[in-house]
Length: 265
Picture 1 (tube, rainbow, N blue to C red):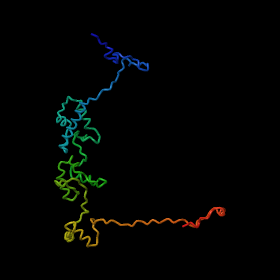
Picture 2: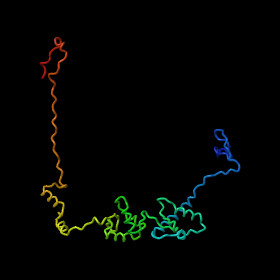
Picture 3: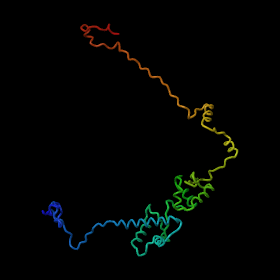
Picture 4: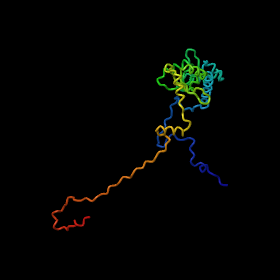
């Protein structure tokens, strides 16, 4: 039986102890003895994912009671994070104190407590009216954004609407408030009942055909009238005439050239 050589199985296998010389014949420098070599460490994705999950649970817990302040111990007890897990607790505290737009947790340094931070820091009627009056534009506020930090927003908005302090756009399905604007009640005036009766006494045509007939009778053209095609005559093209009586040239050769002027049409 023939035997296979090791070189035939792995002809290009690298040497287990490569040389210190590189391809361009330059020697690599070895680190000095006693010097510390820092190697890049991969991120612990499992630990980081666990941290983000705990922060999400904490935000959802605070969102359920947006008016209530919680201590750090209350939140850790809810998440069941023990005191001996100092690394995770330290990271959680750093997330809660982060000053960025994406942080949904508000911290009060005076009481050292936390609560949910909504998009708008509006939690009652007084704060809503103050915000609407101080804003530079007349842009309305979406009630879904107010609901984040205002539990009884629908009931409280009905009170403001009844007092004519706000203008409200309602949903067609449940008639709940969808968008609110500031309203100046001093600009609202009552209309005379006689004028209301005159306004409602005007008969509105029942259908499109009736409205069409009324407009035609009044000498007006309804928008639903068919568009008549415009007939335009084609432009007449002028026939070019031959140029006559132009300036004659070669008069000095009149005795030599033959005269064909009598053949002109």
